Length: 203
Image (cartoon, rainbow, N blue to C red; front, side):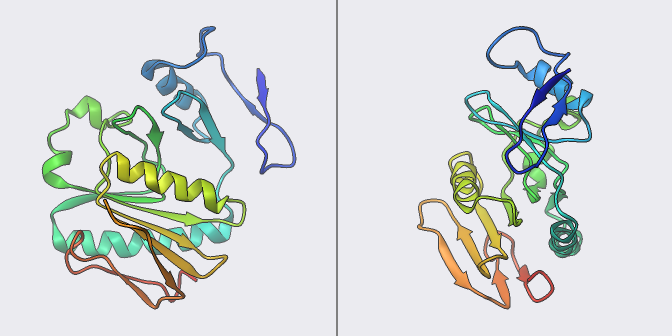
């Protein structure tokens, strides 16, 4: 058993690395096995191959995230043009990184192009829409960099909710991020036709 130190935790977090062979980065197969072996962890992989192990979301953050997910799912069920995913879903982006947005949505026509085996793993696809909710332990700079990476890999609309500063950062391709101060709603047209994210219970 190898111990990894996670800065946001007061004690080291033990991670089982028995699925690895001695090398600097994991193959897709090794990363998949690593995640299966450590299913209680939130794990992402950078494009450079480094593995990031994150602590579980704080209870209050999980509650707010569920409210975002509920709104997106309710809209998606009526709209019928895509599939919605929660924070446990991992995707392999074109740059080779593996990310798990807090909430994501993919157009049905793109999702259905994947094989059943691809869907059953870390699907090789970048979501069309992602939401990241900043918790008290998250670095705003790191999340902003993550949103830029999403855009570079094909996201059409990204929303970063910063509860600490009561702001919402909206990311669209080839545009500077738009920052809203304490908004009541966030309009997601035209990428998600007719969807507005209500912020009242998320703050």
